[in-house]
Image 1 (cartoon, one colour):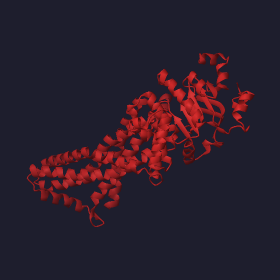
Image 2: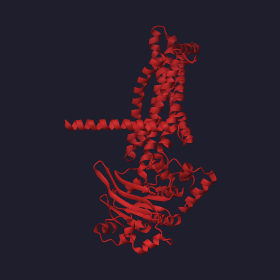
Image 3: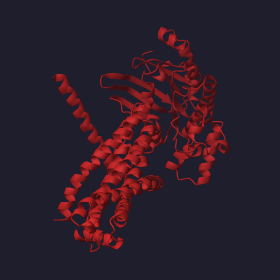
Length: 270
Length: 268
């Protein structure tokens, strides 16, 4: 019994320490955004890796998600003769939830794992120590550019996913359900307009869908960097860090999505 | 053997030689005072004290896992001891802020055991890294200084500038690592196992290179190694670690002539 308690105690201590280190790393990386020196070249390079590099998977994710949403919902809607509302369903689902979450999960798998692997390899081959020795802050040089790039690129990628998902839904609506593209798009617009506008022209649904990826970008970058910098024990350690980074980022994205949705509903729609 | 102060072990004529024509002792650049370090219950260093004066090369020797590289990490404040002081130019590095430590580190150059070259950067970018990070120099000056540093390690800018670390042999990586460590003309050079992992011939070449740099650049050096032949050649002083403590501190000549059975076994 005492042995079991010690195990639990040890696990709890490590978990609390982990959360503390993760928070401190995030705070330092955020603070470094506003302090010299600025690594603009590294940030642009990371924006290219995260943004341009993820374009392919994001386009495919958006297209097939929109198509499958339209296809699945058409079965039920046809029964009630409500296929003209397919645009509403695809538009609302894509912009509010599926666009931000699926984009984040795909980028976490692709980019988060890459960050953990790259920083992990740098750690085990003493390259992080080399940066320190040269007098360069590794957080400023490696973590902050990745964080900043992810914060900026995730909303952009989400807008692309949303757009392509709506387009995918339209393909199914036009080809399989005999709706006109115009009718479908009006239906999409109606659902976005229904939620109301901020600054007269920006749909509240879109605002909600753009705030979330900002947080998800932060989670992906910080989780990837955190596990990368925590890497111990050679190449095997790099593999462990990579897996942990993807799993933790995915869980955090889903959990934060729920709480963020709750918060945004209470702010935007009440 | 108990007193680890460098000065107490030196014969009078050596001390006079070290003082130079002015008769003044060279300044102490690195000084460890009663360092203790333990990870949980595992004691790594116990009461470690030594001094390294300007222009000297202290070799820290001992078997693997005895804490030699840990001392380098304390000099760089990559690790903080549980007790004791590490003075760099008379300033306790453990009392400095993170930003101040980054500045102090710019006085140092470190040659890593596995070279630790940035694998996404070319040879040129690796060597230019310290210059681009901390000195606002025009690009032609950077190129000139990188060329000079590569020349010092017998490599040519034309041949190697664009190569990636993955395209270099072990010995070439070590040379580039040394070039990166010396390019910003540091006052202190730290070597972590400079000959480990190299074939004997390349190892000898690296030892000769270190020796040459020592005389040409006139830097203060700390060399961590278990390669006895190498340290006898490059160092002006040797400290030997055993069971977390310094058990010998003296000149290479004294080390080679030591009668302590453990040291003899280590040398042989």
